[in-house]
Each structure stands twice: as C-alpha cells, then as structure tokens.
Length: 407
Image 1: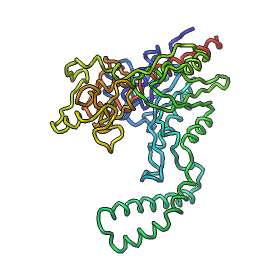
Image 2: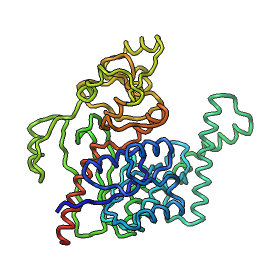
Image 3: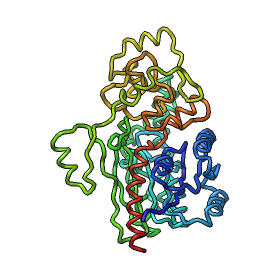
Image 4: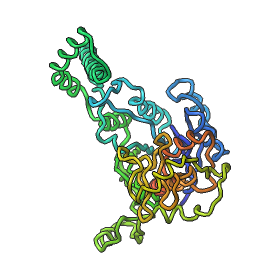
C-alpha cells in the first residue's frame, strides 16, 4: 500500500520543506507564511496550494486554516517556527515572541491531530534557554528587573567606549559592575533549556517525540548545514526513526561497514562538492528570470577577490561572509549574510542567487520572487529540498507501515 498523504506546511518560507515532500508524492493541502516576498515565491512554485497569508498566531488566521482543511485528513504537519532563546551574553528580550512561536505550532498540532508532525530548527536550539514557565508572578518580576539591570550595564559599557560618562552614569555603572555576577546568576537560575520546553509541550498534548541533529551534506546537498529535526506521533506503538545517510564525508572502510549494518543497506556516496554542483553555471549568461544575477563589484573589491585564496575570507574578521568556496568540498552553511555571500571558487565575483539556491539543492525550475536581497534571505532561511525529501521518504515509510497495519 502506497497511498497519497496530505500535509500542511507552517512557517513555510519560500517552500524548501514543501519541495521535499512534493518530490516524495505528498499532497500539500495548505501552507502559512507571514513575509510577503516568501509568500510570493511560495505561490509561484506551488500554484495548487492554498496559502494562509499573515500572522498564524492570530485566532482569525488559525480559524482560516482550520476551515480550509476541514474536509481533509491531515497526515503530517511540517514547519520551522523561528526560535530565539534568551542569552545573558546579549541583550535579547526574555519575552521575545520568536521564542514562543513553537507554542502556536503545538496548538495547531493539538487541534488538527495529524498522524505525525516534523519540525525543523537551527543547531543552536540545542543550547538555547528560555524563561522557566513555572515561575510565579513574584519570580517573574524579579527576573525581569535583573534583565533590565543587565541590559543597562551593557548599554553603559557601550556608552563608556564612545564618550565620557557623567557622574550619575558613572555611579550607576560602578554599582552594576559590582553586582554583575549576582545579576547573571539570578538570570540563569530562572532559565531552562528551550528544547525541554518543546518536548514537554508536545507531551502535554500526547505526542511522542524524538529529535536528532541532521547534516544536509549527508543527504546529497552540496552544503554542510546542520539542523535539529523533531519527529512526533500520536501513536505510542510506533518506533520513530530518522532517515539513513546517503552520503558521507569520507568513503573509508569504517564508514562503509557502519552503513552496511543499517536496515536500508544503501551504498554510500561521497559528499557533493560545490564545484560538482555549480560547474554547469560557469558558462551561463546572466538571467534575471532564472535568478542568475551577477553582483557589480568595484575595481578595488575585485582586486581583493583576486587576492583571496580558496577557503579564505575577503575580510579576516568575517567567518562566512565573502568566504571563497572550496571546489573540492561542500559549501559552508548558506546564509543571507546581508549580501555578504560566498565568493565563487573560479571567478572573482560572489555567487549568484541561482548558484546559492543550487547549493541549497533547489531545482533550476524553482523561481524566487522579490528583490535580490529578499531572494538571498529566502534562500538562506530555507530547508534544503533534498534533505526534506530524505525526511519525507522516511516518514512515508512510517505512514505506510501504520496504514498497512490498520488495513
């Protein structure tokens, strides 16, 4: 039995996650997205999908979604709600709504009750912390006050590097500096791992959840991109699994013997290099329609590009921005980086949006809409379709097993 299964894509972005499920034969019943350029791209490439445009946190938008899918059995809800933890190393708002969007994902899963859900997030989620939900009102007030003090200390420290503080500011800064260890300690004791909050919320709605860190390069994407993947189900007797690797960094005897012991018994391939992925574009002319848009560089910047060797950055202080691709390795994680994208391994120019989309494993037929900066942001935020396809194939097997048992 290999039936057609229905999905919803929440926080869909431009549609990388959806693409992987489409390639595996799933039917997308609905998607939701807030950002206009991503919506335009999603609609352009998924013409048969109804998109809920706007803030899915609002009861009105949730009801719009429920009404839209009311006549359909939803097998899977997928999505990547943006998350933001609280860190004492920065000035992040402990009540930043981006740290709460997963609650809307949980609420929608609880209302629709799909067979499975799959949620994607950045690797940093593993170490993110957030406010303990069990704090009483008095503890919350103390916590907020300590956060305000810490932010004030950071602000005064920054001001002192720019100008001379006045007497009142100096006194305040001195006192805050004296109390800094205590302030940090008081903040930290009221923070809990964000990932635990995820798991507990899903447990409250009776969903069993497993999570794992997956690397897109292990699934044929020409890019090293690690993401946390959650798989949840409402069936306690189902053993949750994650997709087996199809590619590996080194085809050593050890990696082959490890792989041969897995259930799939598929022959491993070596990681796809950036040159293998991008070579076909070396003779392409510029094409705005296909998002193959060249950046105009100044003569001075071109000279800097010429002086930048493979695997190095144009500017030493940057890590990923203006990093020159190594033709013999997958790319680093593709990010938007405010236009500071990768430098081509062979040419003295940065990569075009089309090339970056290919490093994300988008097909050439997938067209991005919006300004160039909006397109770069969409590409950088997307789930690589090939990794999404591996996840989709994996959960499709779980669904087939489930419905074969049901008869």
